[in-house]
Length: 285
Image 1 (cartoon, rainbow, N blue to C red):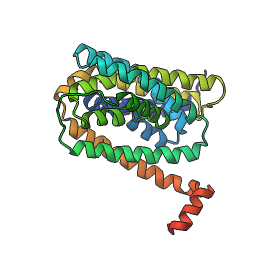
Image 2: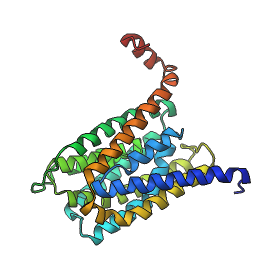
Image 3: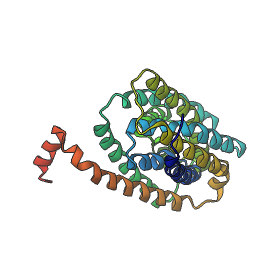
Image 4: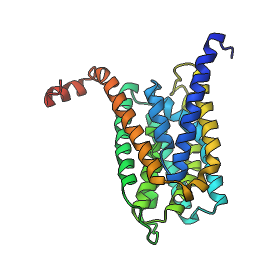
């Protein structure tokens, strides 16, 4: 693939941006067990990348970052294997279904849904950051359905495995160290399955890439290298980082991006009858 010389500065800027995004997102994810996909997806959508393509890009990058993060947690013995073997298969089932369905929806409509979903996750993350964590004896009740829902939302929204699964388990009293280690390690298996599904939809023509291969490769490369650079710190950061501060900062970022994107997308949403009728009923226009 030949790239025009005039495009290189823009490509390097794109690569640098996502290098920083990938590093920060993985640092937060490694510390609190969530937010890599949410942060990355918010930035990609803000740059105009279609939801399905954004989710495919993020999960391709996460094949590397979650593998490195999972290895770090294994090295620090942060994995509860009973929890892992319940979450991973369930997440694969939900993730494959979510990835396949996402590629069949209208891009503008699903983008509105995903933006709203990410905004809600941002509020949820902020709420988690403001709460004091609990530490009680763990239990494994309803973990399989939780994994299915987490995998589905992660694939269809470009992020959500950590906010849905980690937050639920932490809220139920599991020890944070083992929740974060087990959820991040299971996420590698789920991410690989989702990525394979997206690859299959591209090969069969169900998903078509927009924006050019060069820019897609620059953003993907930045996410991978930034995430992999931060991932070895995951196990260590989990022990020492001010997790609530990191999570709170990520939550504010995600909510801000969601509001900004919602304002930008609003005129296009009014082209849909369902939104026009809702505006007329509520008197928002």
